[in-house]
Length: 140
Image (cartoon, rainbow, N blue to C red; front, side, top):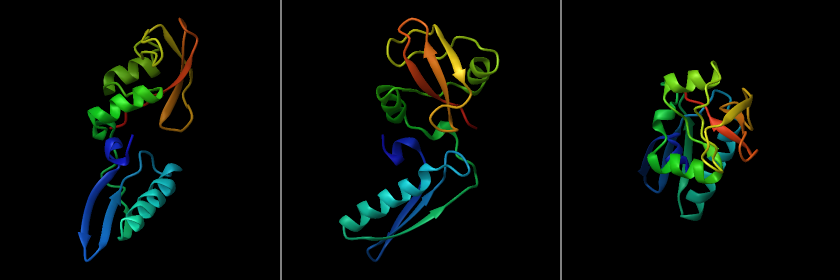
């Protein structure tokens, strides 16, 4: 999964061997943003470019910005990709069994916690294979 797959890179332009990158966090205060910015800076330095990285908060990031490849990679990594806004609410608020297990693909899953490994995820567990997994919440 890359920052491009995740859709947090808003714009990139290059001028005289300097790369200007605009990033939008998945959540305001996302702890991963500093790491993402540092990784971009290191990669650009290795390629011979200086960087200037700017956080852009408006418009707010949306899970719609995750690419299809990014969704596939999330699932492969063990994080359930976000559903649509209405299905997300039915799963997180009403407890409907709509989130498929990333291990066995069963929808016989239940939410364990509104928050998973990060604030943008919820923790689920499969009641068939018993595996816990994160679900990336839908954000609009």
